[in-house]
Image (cartoon, rainbow, N blue to C red):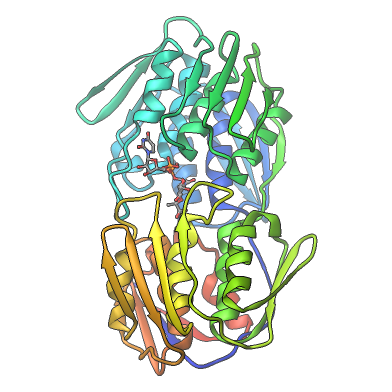
Length: 418
Ligand code: EPZ
């Protein structure tokens, strides 16, 4: 099983480019099920989760083909409308095929995604709105069985709590429904906006994307289109933290600073020198910050997907940092691993208190447990004294394209070993 070895102590310097956003690409690739024909997607990152999505789309009778940084998908009517357990269990975002299949073909049979390391990850906020839109849905032998005799009908959906995937699934389903659907308490993540841009390029009628109220007026037919995936804000934030934690000078290019404004403000509050332009953000000066508190909440708040990485940074910042995880019930799997490296962190339910001290970490073997925890351990390895070995890096490959190469290009001593 592959692992990564990092030798700590190098200050990172230089420019690095962000790849396309995994969490935009996944729903957008599933949205291609809404229109038969050839779709072209540019700036699609090469990731395990993208490959999993391609396998599921191929199972649904699509063909997929890479053309450099682009992915071309030919959508055809599926032979069966099933997303099988062996594919869905590899990537829970596969549930995002439910809305498109149900809306386009009136039927879908999707394996329940199951939980994962960071939480139980229920899908009630995907299923209940579809029932409100006229679908008959029941769970049978671990599968969501969904049918809709006629077209889905519009509804006024109030999400009881904010859900990125739920907003995406229902927004996609509503594009071909009868009438105008209103989503209240919708997620506002930039990936929702990117999905809406693609759907509108296919002929969908959508307003309000990026706000808490999205309105979708159904149309009879959508047509295949072309789209360039938005830059990955979580990768951009991870790379910015890599520069900061090493006391280096790093410029992250081809990103959208506004998408990580909450991180930028927290890093400035901590004392880091952060600058930004239209499509870049940088950290410079080499000074280490002091501990600051964060509370992860839906966008535009501090993103839960940067919580683990920010915690690694706080292990180097003098003073206490209170980190509250407001989204997932178990997103502190990285804490015990950071403690193995010598970090001083106390944990109580959804609150972690980090007592940071520059240069305190000592290299050791650690284990990645989920995607963002893996990134957190790589960041810690960049500053730990000696060598850190991060095992189970397949977690990292789900969501970061060539991370160790990007960090090595900035001067890190890091390599992947088989
Ligand atoms: C998306 O997951 C992202 N994944 C996650 O990124 C991200 O952490 C999360 O949004 C929050 O921003 C993709 O976009 C592929 P949610 P999603 O539905 O849609 C509860 C990464 O590291 N909930 O917004 O599954 C849920 O348990 C991944 O790239 C319900 O109760 O997240 C959670 O507590 C990890 N019922 C909260 O809502 C539901 O039906 C937010 O979940 C759905 C969700």
